[in-house]
Length: 168
View 1 (cartoon, one colour):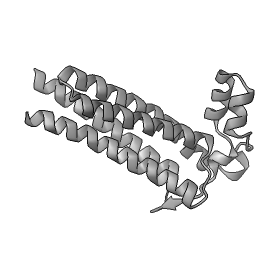
View 2 (view 1 turned 90 degrees about the vertical axis):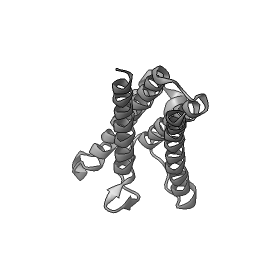
View 3 (view 1 turned 90 degrees about the horizontal axis):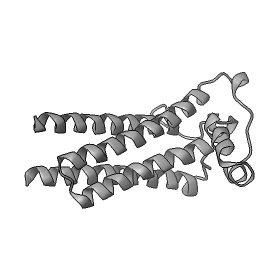
View 4 (view 1 turned 135 degrees about the horizontal axis):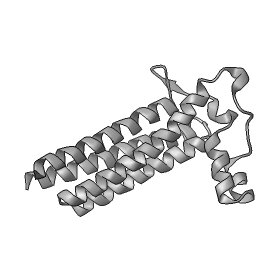
């Protein structure tokens, strides 16, 4: 029974952390006027995915096999989000002359181009993705996002492997 409670608390904690991160992002957008770039929007989608997986897992109260499944999904979402954040961090650290030109807005790309082409354009990033509009302790939003994605990835993987040890 104790393991069951700890598992639920684990997933509720992940859900609440993602909620806090998303809430802070919304505060920066609506309270401070920072418009998210296309890469930021996709990072938000990754955080929402992690949060929803964690919420479903907390409600489900999974057994060991399902814990592997949920943690695998959380790790996959964190890996994808981390890849997107890494791309944005790379863009932010390019010399000024190498930053790509600003592209059309996210809504325009999704409405005008086929989905595959729009996604390719979005994920390649643009000049607006290279701008650092806010930082804390010397880290940009993208760098903080990358850190949290790494924490979720490592936590998910450690949880998978610790579950595996307890079953043997």
